[in-house]
Each structure stands twice: as structure tokens, then as C-alpha cells.
Length: 251
Image (cartoon, rainbow, N blue to C red; front, side, top):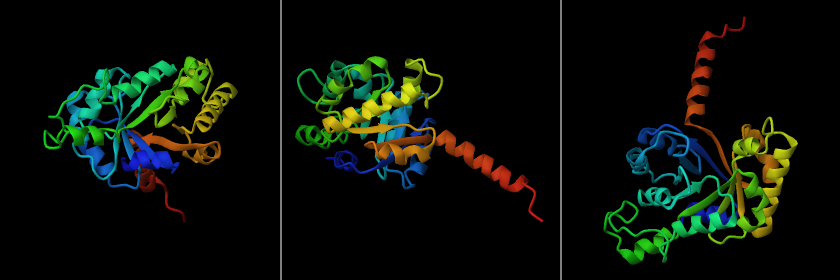
């Protein structure tokens, strides 16, 4: 079992961030921080197979997950073969979607296609038995961000092999026709997902616009928080630097 999978299973609080820049140097730099994991955003950022592979090549200090473009088996396969510690799959809308997602991560009949030459397989050095055993440590996170997913959330949460439900609050806001993520309907949906996760013994994670809100959601059972991104760090740092120099000194 991977350290990240074990931390999720035990209910430890896990803090990670999104990487939007397809650069292995960014991954390497952020792996030197106290973050618990990094997530390459291959859904919304310009990661192709080559850049995804090069970014995953430098992991080691911190587990690196991939938010795949879709939950299609080929996207899951590419991320895991390249050595991702796990995947975040967007738009899981039903229990059947969740079952298919888990299947695509497993070396079983009808599941993940086997390759012994991949990075995950040690480029042919691990052997089939060891690689299949270690592959069971891949973290599988189902992103919940659609009305149909909220309606089917109890059944989705009950699917074995899902390590966590991750709430895509921005897309959920759009799906519900709400004006902003703090609207009552959105909060009610997030609370429903948290309750379903707790009832099924499934961990729940989320993105928050305000990191300070994490405490209140921990009290409702959330333990995984993917907050801000490399873009946010660059922008915030640059603003702070400019402000520190340009701000008139106090007399």
C-alpha cells in the first residue's frame, strides 16, 4: 500500500495542490515543500503524453497524481503507466462510472492493459508479479461535480476500490445553476456528498477558494484538500514582492 493511500485510508488530513504548468522543474520544486501530494491537471492544463511523462519522471519526494482528461481507460492507463501515484477522474456521474473507473486501474480481466516495459513496471525490471502487486497501491479518486452524481452519491460512495470522493465545487456550482460556490444549493450538495462518504466509510476531498474554510469542512468529514496551484503561487509571490518594494515605508 502506498503511503498516500494509507494516509487516506486512516483519515489523516492530506493537503495538495494543482500543477497547471507542464514542467518537470515545477514538480521538482514543489516536491521540496511540506505538501502531501501534487496533482498534474491534465484535464484543464496543456499536458500531452510527453509532458505528462516527463513531469512524472521526477516524482519521489512527494506522491504525484494526475487529474486525467476523462475517465476513459486509455487516459487512466497512460497516467498509471507513466508512474503516477494515482488518478483523479473528472465527471464520475454514476455508480457504474465509478465501477468502470476502478476496473480501468486494475490488472484483471477486462481491466487495465498490461505492459512490463513502462516506468511503473521499472522498465522491465520488476517482473509481472511484483508490478501487479504494487499497482494495487494506485490511489483512485472519483470527482463529483454533476447533478446526477449527487443524486446517485450513496451508490457511488459504496463502490469498492474508490479511495476518495473529490468534490469539484466550481463545476457543481455551474451544474446546479447557482451564482457562486457559496450558494445554499451548492453547500447543501457538498454536505450531502460528505454525509454519503462518511456513511460508506469513504474519504472526501474538495477544492476551496478560501483555504481557511478547510477547518469547517474537516468537521463535516473532509480530509483531502487540493488547494491553489503553481499559478497562484507565482502570482501571489510576484504581487507580494512588488508590493514590498513599491510600498512607501512608514515614517
